[in-house]
View 1: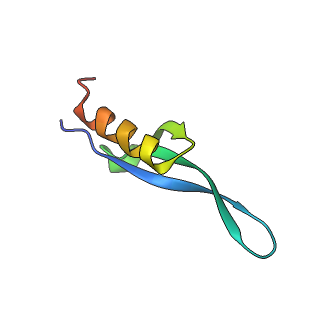
View 2: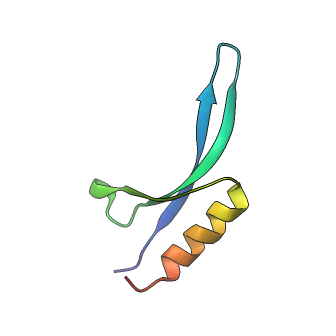
Length: 58
């Protein structure tokens, strides 16, 4: 089965605005059982991790 991942921001909300505080990589290979694979400080790091996850052989 081919792995598929997506990257989403982590938000910290205050009264006036939402700030992105990090990024998560989510395994969406099984839509009924999505899991957070890793957390990252930058979007670039998260995108690289998602790419590596999709190419890994687990």
